[in-house]
Length: 591
Image 1 (cartoon, helix red, strand yellow):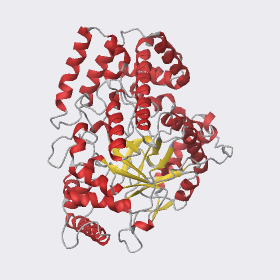
Image 2 (cartoon, one colour):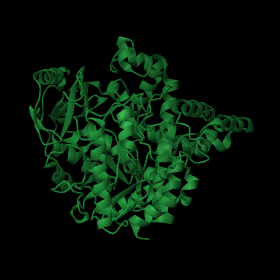
Image 3 (cartoon, helix red, strand yellow):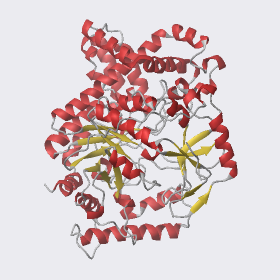
Image 4 (tube, helix red, strand yellow):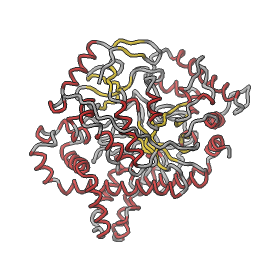
């Protein structure tokens, strides 16, 4: 473990970490139980590499909640995921679908919208359940079925109106439906499957279910609970656990249902011919007052949060409000906690994407009360972290992808490759020695390549300059508007020139938004990279960002449904008829 007293920022300038920052971080590192003080070096693991795809593959990347069908309850679900996988595999030749983290949020409204600030990373949000696919629904009475129809009707109507995703209404309705379905006795085979699930999940499931039951009484931030309940090891928690057994059992049952549908989605993808299937995303951390923080509070560091230093696009830096794991605790446990988390994510997946994979090596810690730029890098044992990742993903037969965008230590990408972990290359960030768009032949082979990410505006917004106007209106720029706009115009001009130079668009004129989008993906197809991720939002002409880093209530982060350029909703059933989607897929596949 170590703390960088200086670091190189995104512009290549050496920056000295402030004394106040160092003092605060050192104080936080000492604020752990004595049992975890020793910084133990983990045993050296046998070298394991995750399986790497042998051939070029492509697939859609999407925020699953944003993709609704006419049968979903106002929120994309696991049946929608399975249907997208089937269609894109059989009709378009896709080999994977990359989705946002499905991590679970609060057990009662209000439900936090961010997939990257969950209450737990171990379990999955029941918002993604397709209620009608639960086997016990077939045993409901006509009156109970009518009640479910009444619950779903207003939510199904909302998907055709381009309204923002309303998680509170969705979960209120689905929870009510689940309470009805819960009254149906399980068959002996189903009961045996539930019992087996509980045994396999063990203490982790018990802690999650207990936290949910307590949160329903005391609120979803354990730090505000009565003092005796804030520590899961107290006698008061044991008493409360017994008294809240019924609601806790409900939450354990719900997780079993979700796990079944996650497995079914992966099976549907593979049955349709996908070589990889569903790639799940693992967030950097979880809410500081949530279930993971409550159950494992000895391993988390208080008084600091994780984020990112200022960079070219997020000029004020980012504070993700996530508490970091203590490097010493991870080492003392031989990185089993990390391995168990990755193993749970990979169990029913074709791949695992590790958000901000640089965090396996070092994380940007921000002391409480300080701005995002006033942080410092704290190091972890990268060899042990990557060994745990590779071993668990390899054991599941899944691929591993690390999101290594931003400030990356020079050696880390070689270490990722050595462990079979693919990197991530995003078109807007790939530049040559003279700051020109990087020629296709020089891109990495062992990588997932994309045009943008969920934190970036779609390609159409870059072409029109809307992304600058919107960021300026939200107060996210540190440079004058005219400087920012001029740089954005240069960026677009560079890429228009590069596309024309590759013969992907005609020279001498500005392409349309649809032409620009398809051509950018055609450019990615000329790289040697193994995986090409096609943003579903870009493929339907969406112009809005899913997330604007640096904002909270100023922008509807993580609530934007999938829409076309006119703002009209695009449902799952509409996808085959979207011209720009077909053009984009042809650009990637050549078919």
